[in-house]
Image (tube, one colour):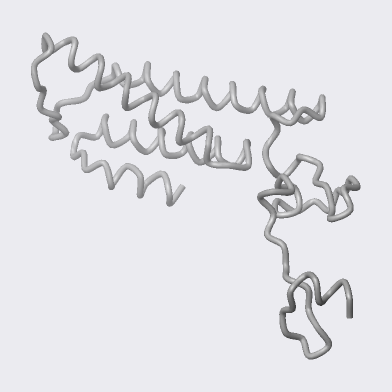
Length: 158
């Protein structure tokens, strides 16, 4: 809730309808991040929302530059349509994640992918770091007897 209110405040609208819309948008984006266990879905949705809003405003202004007015009395109940779209997108992300988890698909959030350990064997350690693809996982350098990092050659041939 706090992050959704912060999202609304950062958009700087004094109109209650617009402020409420931005708060709902922030809440829905937060839910998408929790459901998908990543920020990709909410970021993509935010980008799509901004592109759509800019396109509609440009078309309504006949291709001219348009001022973005966020002052009081610029919003109305029509933002409820956008709220319904936001809720629909949360449901879409939830259904997609549910399906991906049920089928074990790689589309599921990063916390659900099966990771390979250093020997290439499957491992279900459960952490997001362990579930990263092998090239993206951070590897600890081998430690010598003194506890300092040693080159791989030294570690293999003591």
